[in-house]
Amino acid sequence: MPELLAGTASVDITPNLGCHMVGYFNDRLATGIHDPLFARAIALRAGDTTLGFVICDVIDVPADVVDAAKARIQQLTGVPPQNVLISATHTHTGPSIVGALGTPKEEKYAQDTIPRIVDAFTMALGRLQPAQVAFTAGDCTGEVHNRRWHMKDGSVRMNPGYQNPDSVRPAGPTDPQLGLMIVRTPQRQPIAVFANLALHYVGAGGSKEHCWISADYFGAFGKALQRCAGAEFTAILSNGCQGDINNCDFTRPARTSPHPYAQIERVANVVASEAWKAWNLLREEDFRSDVTLDARLERVRFKARTATPEELGKARERLKGEAKPADLEWAYARELVLLSELPTEWDVPVHTMRVGDLGIAGLFGEAFCEIGLDIKARSPYPQTMVVGLANGSIGYVATDKALDEGSYETRLCRHVRAPKGTGKLWADTAVGLLGQMK
Image (spheres, rainbow, N blue to C red):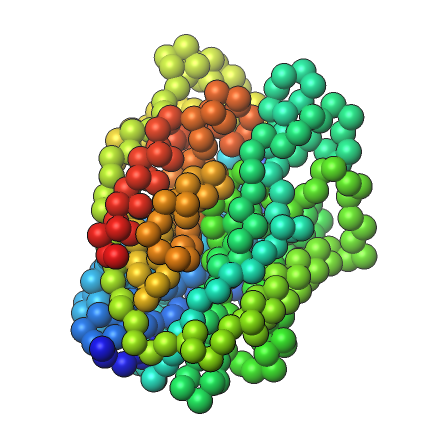
Protein backbone atom coordinates (compact mmCIF):
# COMPACT_ATOMS: atom_id res chain seq x y z
CA MET A 1 0.00 0.00 0.00
CA PRO A 2 1.35 3.50 -0.84
CA GLU A 3 2.96 5.54 1.93
CA LEU A 4 0.82 8.25 3.50
CA LEU A 5 1.96 11.84 3.01
CA ALA A 6 0.59 14.89 4.83
CA GLY A 7 1.04 18.64 4.71
CA THR A 8 -0.60 21.65 6.33
CA ALA A 9 -0.86 25.42 5.98
CA SER A 10 -2.72 28.37 7.47
CA VAL A 11 -3.56 31.61 5.68
CA ASP A 12 -4.78 34.76 7.46
CA ILE A 13 -8.33 35.78 6.47
CA THR A 14 -8.83 38.54 9.07
CA PRO A 15 -11.00 41.37 7.68
CA ASN A 16 -10.45 45.10 7.95
CA LEU A 17 -11.94 47.05 10.82
CA GLY A 18 -15.29 48.61 10.04
CA CYS A 19 -16.61 45.49 8.33
CA HIS A 20 -20.11 44.24 9.10
CA MET A 21 -20.16 41.35 11.58
CA VAL A 22 -22.74 38.60 11.27
CA GLY A 23 -24.12 36.25 13.89
CA TYR A 24 -26.61 38.19 15.98
CA PHE A 25 -30.00 39.75 15.30
CA ASN A 26 -28.52 43.23 15.03
CA ASP A 27 -25.91 44.58 12.62
CA ARG A 28 -22.50 45.32 14.15
CA LEU A 29 -19.36 46.99 12.78
CA ALA A 30 -15.96 45.64 13.79
CA THR A 31 -14.10 48.06 16.07
CA GLY A 32 -11.20 45.81 17.05
CA ILE A 33 -9.45 42.48 16.51
CA HIS A 34 -9.10 40.18 19.49
CA ASP A 35 -7.44 37.36 17.54
CA PRO A 36 -6.89 36.68 13.82
CA LEU A 37 -9.03 34.49 11.57
CA PHE A 38 -7.48 31.73 9.43
CA ALA A 39 -8.19 29.31 6.63
CA ARG A 40 -6.46 26.17 7.90
CA ALA A 41 -5.71 23.33 5.49
CA ILE A 42 -4.64 19.70 5.71
CA ALA A 43 -3.63 17.74 2.61
CA LEU A 44 -3.32 13.94 2.63
CA ARG A 45 -1.96 11.79 -0.18
CA ALA A 46 -1.67 8.03 -0.63
CA GLY A 47 -0.68 6.85 -4.10
CA ASP A 48 -2.81 8.57 -6.71
CA THR A 49 -5.42 9.86 -4.25
CA THR A 50 -5.22 13.25 -2.56
CA LEU A 51 -7.71 14.58 -0.01
CA GLY A 52 -7.96 18.10 1.35
CA PHE A 53 -9.69 19.81 4.27
CA VAL A 54 -9.88 23.61 4.50
CA ILE A 55 -11.67 24.98 7.56
CA CYS A 56 -12.27 28.74 7.72
CA ASP A 57 -12.88 30.94 10.75
CA VAL A 58 -16.12 32.45 9.44
CA ILE A 59 -19.81 31.84 10.06
CA ASP A 60 -20.27 30.14 6.68
CA VAL A 61 -18.39 29.71 3.40
CA PRO A 62 -20.94 30.50 0.65
CA ALA A 63 -21.39 27.87 -2.06
CA ASP A 64 -20.20 30.23 -4.82
CA VAL A 65 -16.97 30.86 -2.88
CA VAL A 66 -16.52 27.11 -2.36
CA ASP A 67 -17.14 26.30 -6.01
CA ALA A 68 -14.75 28.99 -7.24
CA ALA A 69 -12.03 27.89 -4.82
CA LYS A 70 -12.38 24.22 -5.76
CA ALA A 71 -12.29 25.02 -9.47
CA ARG A 72 -9.07 26.98 -9.00
CA ILE A 73 -7.58 24.21 -6.84
CA GLN A 74 -8.29 21.67 -9.57
CA GLN A 75 -6.77 23.98 -12.18
CA LEU A 76 -3.59 24.46 -10.15
CA THR A 77 -3.14 21.03 -8.58
CA GLY A 78 -5.32 18.53 -10.45
CA VAL A 79 -7.17 17.57 -7.26
CA PRO A 80 -10.88 17.18 -8.15
CA PRO A 81 -13.58 19.11 -6.26
CA GLN A 82 -15.03 15.99 -4.63
CA ASN A 83 -11.67 15.38 -2.92
CA VAL A 84 -11.61 18.74 -1.10
CA LEU A 85 -13.95 19.58 1.78
CA ILE A 86 -14.28 23.28 2.61
CA SER A 87 -16.23 24.32 5.69
CA ALA A 88 -16.66 27.05 8.30
CA THR A 89 -16.16 26.92 12.05
CA HIS A 90 -19.23 29.14 12.52
CA THR A 91 -17.74 31.88 14.66
CA HIS A 92 -20.30 34.61 15.34
CA THR A 93 -17.61 37.27 15.71
CA GLY A 94 -16.43 37.34 12.11
CA PRO A 95 -17.20 39.33 8.96
CA SER A 96 -20.52 38.96 7.14
CA ILE A 97 -19.27 36.73 4.36
CA VAL A 98 -23.01 36.03 4.08
CA GLY A 99 -25.88 38.34 4.97
CA ALA A 100 -28.55 37.44 7.52
CA LEU A 101 -31.50 39.24 9.09
CA GLY A 102 -30.34 42.86 9.56
CA THR A 103 -26.71 42.36 8.52
CA PRO A 104 -25.66 43.01 4.90
CA LYS A 105 -23.15 40.82 3.09
CA GLU A 106 -19.55 41.95 2.70
CA GLU A 107 -19.30 41.14 -1.01
CA LYS A 108 -15.64 42.07 -1.45
CA TYR A 109 -14.57 40.03 1.58
CA ALA A 110 -16.33 36.97 0.20
CA GLN A 111 -14.50 37.28 -3.11
CA ASP A 112 -11.17 38.02 -1.41
CA THR A 113 -11.49 34.79 0.59
CA ILE A 114 -11.44 32.60 -2.54
CA PRO A 115 -7.70 32.94 -3.33
CA ARG A 116 -6.82 32.58 0.35
CA ILE A 117 -8.59 29.22 0.53
CA VAL A 118 -6.77 28.16 -2.63
CA ASP A 119 -3.45 29.34 -1.21
CA ALA A 120 -3.98 27.41 2.03
CA PHE A 121 -4.62 24.11 0.24
CA THR A 122 -1.90 24.65 -2.37
CA MET A 123 0.67 25.44 0.30
CA ALA A 124 -0.36 22.38 2.31
CA LEU A 125 0.08 20.26 -0.79
CA GLY A 126 3.55 21.70 -1.29
CA ARG A 127 4.56 20.63 2.22
CA LEU A 128 3.75 16.93 1.95
CA GLN A 129 5.97 14.68 4.05
CA PRO A 130 5.81 11.07 5.25
CA ALA A 131 3.11 10.69 7.83
CA GLN A 132 1.16 8.39 10.11
CA VAL A 133 -2.44 8.79 11.20
CA ALA A 134 -4.56 7.56 14.09
CA PHE A 135 -8.17 8.10 15.15
CA THR A 136 -9.78 8.40 18.53
CA ALA A 137 -12.52 10.26 20.38
CA GLY A 138 -13.11 12.12 23.62
CA ASP A 139 -16.26 13.08 25.51
CA CYS A 140 -17.28 16.71 26.12
CA THR A 141 -20.60 16.02 27.84
CA GLY A 142 -20.31 18.93 30.24
CA GLU A 143 -19.87 21.51 27.46
CA VAL A 144 -22.72 20.69 25.06
CA HIS A 145 -26.40 21.29 25.77
CA ASN A 146 -29.56 21.21 23.71
CA ARG A 147 -30.77 24.81 23.53
CA ARG A 148 -34.38 23.95 22.66
CA TRP A 149 -36.66 23.34 25.67
CA HIS A 150 -40.19 22.15 26.22
CA MET A 151 -42.08 24.74 28.29
CA LYS A 152 -44.99 24.31 30.69
CA ASP A 153 -47.35 26.05 28.25
CA GLY A 154 -46.68 23.31 25.66
CA SER A 155 -44.41 25.40 23.46
CA VAL A 156 -40.79 24.79 22.55
CA ARG A 157 -38.43 27.71 23.11
CA MET A 158 -34.81 28.33 22.15
CA ASN A 159 -32.69 29.53 25.09
CA PRO A 160 -35.44 29.66 27.74
CA GLY A 161 -33.20 31.29 30.34
CA TYR A 162 -31.22 29.92 33.24
CA GLN A 163 -33.27 27.97 35.80
CA ASN A 164 -36.52 29.19 34.29
CA PRO A 165 -39.33 27.71 36.42
CA ASP A 166 -41.45 27.36 33.29
CA SER A 167 -38.89 25.07 31.60
CA VAL A 168 -39.68 21.37 31.60
CA ARG A 169 -36.95 19.46 29.74
CA PRO A 170 -34.67 19.71 26.69
CA ALA A 171 -36.45 19.10 23.39
CA GLY A 172 -33.65 16.97 21.95
CA PRO A 173 -30.39 15.13 22.65
CA THR A 174 -26.75 16.22 22.39
CA ASP A 175 -23.73 14.68 20.68
CA PRO A 176 -20.81 15.11 23.10
CA GLN A 177 -18.33 13.06 21.05
CA LEU A 178 -15.08 14.88 20.25
CA GLY A 179 -13.81 13.16 17.11
CA LEU A 180 -10.06 13.28 16.50
CA MET A 181 -7.77 12.52 13.57
CA ILE A 182 -4.14 12.88 14.62
CA VAL A 183 -1.42 13.12 11.99
CA ARG A 184 2.28 12.84 12.88
CA THR A 185 5.65 12.09 11.31
CA PRO A 186 7.20 8.61 11.62
CA GLN A 187 9.49 10.26 14.19
CA ARG A 188 6.41 11.03 16.31
CA GLN A 189 6.35 14.77 15.72
CA PRO A 190 2.80 16.15 15.37
CA ILE A 191 1.78 17.51 11.96
CA ALA A 192 -1.93 18.13 12.45
CA VAL A 193 -4.98 17.40 14.54
CA PHE A 194 -8.40 17.49 12.89
CA ALA A 195 -11.08 17.61 15.58
CA ASN A 196 -14.86 17.64 15.34
CA LEU A 197 -17.45 18.66 17.93
CA ALA A 198 -21.13 19.59 17.63
CA LEU A 199 -21.16 22.90 19.52
CA HIS A 200 -22.71 25.95 17.85
CA TYR A 201 -20.19 28.47 19.21
CA VAL A 202 -19.27 29.98 22.58
CA GLY A 203 -18.86 33.67 21.84
CA ALA A 204 -18.07 36.94 23.57
CA GLY A 205 -21.55 38.46 23.44
CA GLY A 206 -23.32 40.47 20.78
CA SER A 207 -23.27 43.97 22.20
CA LYS A 208 -22.58 46.92 19.94
CA GLU A 209 -20.10 48.16 22.54
CA HIS A 210 -17.82 45.14 22.13
CA CYS A 211 -17.47 44.34 18.44
CA TRP A 212 -14.11 42.68 18.09
CA ILE A 213 -13.18 40.11 15.45
CA SER A 214 -12.44 36.69 16.95
CA ALA A 215 -12.18 33.07 15.82
CA ASP A 216 -14.11 32.17 18.99
CA TYR A 217 -13.21 29.00 20.89
CA PHE A 218 -12.34 27.26 17.63
CA GLY A 219 -9.16 29.33 17.36
CA ALA A 220 -8.44 29.21 21.09
CA PHE A 221 -8.69 25.39 20.96
CA GLY A 222 -5.74 25.21 18.60
CA LYS A 223 -3.57 27.36 20.85
CA ALA A 224 -4.55 25.37 23.92
CA LEU A 225 -3.83 22.00 22.30
CA GLN A 226 -0.41 23.17 21.14
CA ARG A 227 0.34 24.26 24.71
CA CYS A 228 -0.61 20.79 25.91
CA ALA A 229 1.64 19.12 23.36
CA GLY A 230 4.49 21.61 23.72
CA ALA A 231 4.80 21.73 19.94
CA GLU A 232 3.65 23.76 16.95
CA PHE A 233 1.33 22.07 14.46
CA THR A 234 -1.94 22.73 12.67
CA ALA A 235 -4.85 22.21 15.06
CA ILE A 236 -8.29 22.41 13.47
CA LEU A 237 -11.62 22.21 15.29
CA SER A 238 -14.40 21.62 12.76
CA ASN A 239 -18.04 22.01 13.73
CA GLY A 240 -20.52 19.17 13.73
CA CYS A 241 -24.31 18.94 13.63
CA GLN A 242 -24.90 21.85 15.97
CA GLY A 243 -28.21 23.36 14.83
CA ASP A 244 -29.86 22.83 18.22
CA ILE A 245 -26.77 22.77 20.46
CA ASN A 246 -25.03 25.45 22.49
CA ASN A 247 -22.87 25.82 25.60
CA CYS A 248 -25.57 27.02 28.03
CA ASP A 249 -26.59 24.70 30.85
CA PHE A 250 -30.02 26.11 31.64
CA THR A 251 -30.47 23.77 34.61
CA ARG A 252 -27.86 25.78 36.54
CA PRO A 253 -27.17 29.48 37.14
CA ALA A 254 -25.32 31.37 34.42
CA ARG A 255 -21.55 31.26 34.72
CA THR A 256 -19.76 34.36 35.95
CA SER A 257 -17.34 35.73 33.35
CA PRO A 258 -14.52 37.99 34.57
CA HIS A 259 -14.00 39.26 31.02
CA PRO A 260 -15.77 38.86 27.63
CA TYR A 261 -13.50 36.03 26.45
CA ALA A 262 -13.45 34.02 29.66
CA GLN A 263 -15.91 31.38 28.45
CA ILE A 264 -14.15 31.08 25.08
CA GLU A 265 -10.86 30.38 26.85
CA ARG A 266 -12.43 28.04 29.40
CA VAL A 267 -14.26 25.88 26.86
CA ALA A 268 -11.23 25.80 24.56
CA ASN A 269 -9.12 24.54 27.46
CA VAL A 270 -11.67 21.86 28.36
CA VAL A 271 -11.97 20.59 24.79
CA ALA A 272 -8.21 20.73 24.19
CA SER A 273 -7.48 18.85 27.41
CA GLU A 274 -9.99 16.18 26.43
CA ALA A 275 -8.31 15.91 23.03
CA TRP A 276 -4.87 15.67 24.69
CA LYS A 277 -6.10 12.94 27.03
CA ALA A 278 -7.59 10.88 24.17
CA TRP A 279 -4.44 11.43 22.10
CA ASN A 280 -2.24 10.09 24.90
CA LEU A 281 -4.42 7.02 25.38
CA LEU A 282 -3.57 5.90 21.84
CA ARG A 283 -1.12 3.05 21.39
CA GLU A 284 1.85 3.16 19.05
CA GLU A 285 0.27 0.50 16.84
CA ASP A 286 -2.78 2.76 16.37
CA PHE A 287 -0.71 5.03 14.11
CA ARG A 288 -0.71 3.78 10.53
CA SER A 289 0.88 4.89 7.28
CA ASP A 290 -0.94 2.28 5.16
CA VAL A 291 -4.39 3.85 4.90
CA THR A 292 -6.92 4.00 2.09
CA LEU A 293 -8.08 7.46 0.98
CA ASP A 294 -11.34 7.95 -0.87
CA ALA A 295 -14.08 10.53 -1.44
CA ARG A 296 -17.63 10.69 -2.77
CA LEU A 297 -19.90 13.66 -3.47
CA GLU A 298 -23.53 13.43 -4.52
CA ARG A 299 -25.86 16.33 -5.22
CA VAL A 300 -29.42 15.97 -3.99
CA ARG A 301 -32.42 18.13 -4.78
CA PHE A 302 -33.35 20.80 -2.27
CA LYS A 303 -36.88 22.24 -2.42
CA ALA A 304 -37.00 25.25 -0.14
CA ARG A 305 -39.93 26.21 2.03
CA THR A 306 -41.65 29.38 0.85
CA ALA A 307 -44.05 31.92 2.31
CA THR A 308 -47.73 31.66 1.46
CA PRO A 309 -49.28 34.52 -0.55
CA GLU A 310 -51.02 35.68 2.63
CA GLU A 311 -47.77 35.69 4.64
CA LEU A 312 -45.98 37.54 1.87
CA GLY A 313 -48.76 40.12 1.64
CA LYS A 314 -48.58 40.82 5.38
CA ALA A 315 -44.81 41.11 5.13
CA ARG A 316 -45.00 43.68 2.33
CA GLU A 317 -47.54 45.67 4.33
CA ARG A 318 -45.28 45.75 7.38
CA LEU A 319 -42.38 47.04 5.30
CA LYS A 320 -44.28 50.09 4.11
CA GLY A 321 -42.95 53.33 5.54
CA GLU A 322 -39.81 53.78 7.61
CA ALA A 323 -37.26 50.99 7.78
CA LYS A 324 -36.92 49.44 11.25
CA PRO A 325 -34.02 46.96 11.09
CA ALA A 326 -33.82 46.78 14.90
CA ASP A 327 -37.44 45.55 15.01
CA LEU A 328 -37.30 41.74 14.83
CA GLU A 329 -40.74 41.41 13.21
CA TRP A 330 -39.77 44.00 10.60
CA ALA A 331 -36.56 42.05 9.93
CA TYR A 332 -38.45 38.79 9.44
CA ALA A 333 -40.92 40.51 7.13
CA ARG A 334 -37.98 41.73 5.07
CA GLU A 335 -36.64 38.16 5.00
CA LEU A 336 -39.89 36.86 3.48
CA VAL A 337 -39.77 39.49 0.75
CA LEU A 338 -36.13 38.71 0.00
CA LEU A 339 -36.95 35.00 -0.10
CA SER A 340 -39.66 35.61 -2.70
CA GLU A 341 -36.94 36.82 -5.08
CA LEU A 342 -34.68 33.77 -4.64
CA PRO A 343 -34.73 30.34 -6.34
CA THR A 344 -36.82 27.71 -4.62
CA GLU A 345 -35.17 24.55 -5.99
CA TRP A 346 -31.54 23.63 -6.55
CA ASP A 347 -29.06 20.83 -5.89
CA VAL A 348 -26.89 20.69 -2.76
CA PRO A 349 -23.88 18.45 -2.04
CA VAL A 350 -23.66 15.59 0.43
CA HIS A 351 -19.95 14.85 0.81
CA THR A 352 -18.12 11.86 2.28
CA MET A 353 -14.47 10.97 2.72
CA ARG A 354 -12.52 8.01 3.97
CA VAL A 355 -9.17 8.08 5.76
CA GLY A 356 -8.45 4.46 6.63
CA ASP A 357 -11.04 3.35 9.19
CA LEU A 358 -12.35 6.89 9.68
CA GLY A 359 -15.47 7.96 7.83
CA ILE A 360 -16.21 11.66 7.37
CA ALA A 361 -19.55 13.06 6.21
CA GLY A 362 -20.01 16.70 5.20
CA LEU A 363 -23.48 18.27 5.33
CA PHE A 364 -24.50 21.52 3.65
CA GLY A 365 -25.88 23.40 6.64
CA GLU A 366 -26.51 23.59 10.37
CA ALA A 367 -28.11 20.21 10.87
CA PHE A 368 -29.70 19.28 14.19
CA CYS A 369 -27.55 16.89 16.21
CA GLU A 370 -30.08 14.05 15.81
CA ILE A 371 -29.16 13.95 12.11
CA GLY A 372 -25.46 13.57 12.88
CA LEU A 373 -26.17 10.92 15.50
CA ASP A 374 -28.20 8.96 12.94
CA ILE A 375 -25.33 9.02 10.44
CA LYS A 376 -22.83 7.90 13.06
CA ALA A 377 -25.10 5.07 14.22
CA ARG A 378 -25.53 3.71 10.69
CA SER A 379 -22.01 4.33 9.39
CA PRO A 380 -20.01 1.21 8.45
CA TYR A 381 -16.84 2.70 9.97
CA PRO A 382 -15.65 2.20 13.55
CA GLN A 383 -15.44 5.99 13.86
CA THR A 384 -17.29 8.68 11.92
CA MET A 385 -17.17 12.46 12.03
CA VAL A 386 -19.98 14.60 10.63
CA VAL A 387 -18.84 18.07 9.54
CA GLY A 388 -21.51 20.74 9.31
CA LEU A 389 -21.50 23.80 7.05
CA ALA A 390 -19.58 21.70 4.53
CA ASN A 391 -19.14 23.22 1.05
CA GLY A 392 -21.70 25.92 1.85
CA SER A 393 -24.94 26.07 3.78
CA ILE A 394 -28.69 26.43 3.43
CA GLY A 395 -28.87 27.27 7.15
CA TYR A 396 -30.74 25.26 9.74
CA VAL A 397 -31.81 21.71 8.95
CA ALA A 398 -34.28 20.79 11.67
CA THR A 399 -35.86 17.41 12.30
CA ASP A 400 -39.45 16.91 11.17
CA LYS A 401 -40.50 16.86 14.82
CA ALA A 402 -38.81 20.21 15.48
CA LEU A 403 -40.49 21.78 12.46
CA ASP A 404 -43.82 20.92 14.05
CA GLU A 405 -42.72 22.30 17.41
CA GLY A 406 -41.53 25.67 16.08
CA SER A 407 -39.13 28.27 17.58
CA TYR A 408 -36.22 30.22 16.10
CA GLU A 409 -34.52 27.40 14.19
CA THR A 410 -37.72 26.71 12.25
CA ARG A 411 -38.97 30.24 11.49
CA LEU A 412 -38.84 30.91 7.75
CA CYS A 413 -36.06 33.24 6.59
CA ARG A 414 -33.01 33.07 4.34
CA HIS A 415 -31.14 30.78 6.74
CA VAL A 416 -34.18 28.66 7.69
CA ARG A 417 -35.63 27.08 4.53
CA ALA A 418 -35.28 23.32 4.85
CA PRO A 419 -38.59 21.39 4.60
CA LYS A 420 -39.53 18.15 6.30
CA GLY A 421 -37.60 15.15 5.05
CA THR A 422 -34.36 17.06 4.42
CA GLY A 423 -32.47 15.58 7.35
CA LYS A 424 -33.47 12.02 6.50
CA LEU A 425 -32.59 12.46 2.82
CA TRP A 426 -29.15 13.80 3.67
CA ALA A 427 -28.49 11.14 6.30
CA ASP A 428 -29.56 8.32 3.98
CA THR A 429 -27.39 9.73 1.18
CA ALA A 430 -24.37 10.12 3.46
CA VAL A 431 -24.68 6.58 4.84
CA GLY A 432 -24.99 5.23 1.31
CA LEU A 433 -21.85 7.07 0.17
CA LEU A 434 -19.91 5.94 3.23
CA GLY A 435 -20.90 2.37 2.40
CA GLN A 436 -19.69 2.74 -1.20
CA MET A 437 -16.21 3.68 0.01
CA LYS A 438 -16.10 0.81 2.51
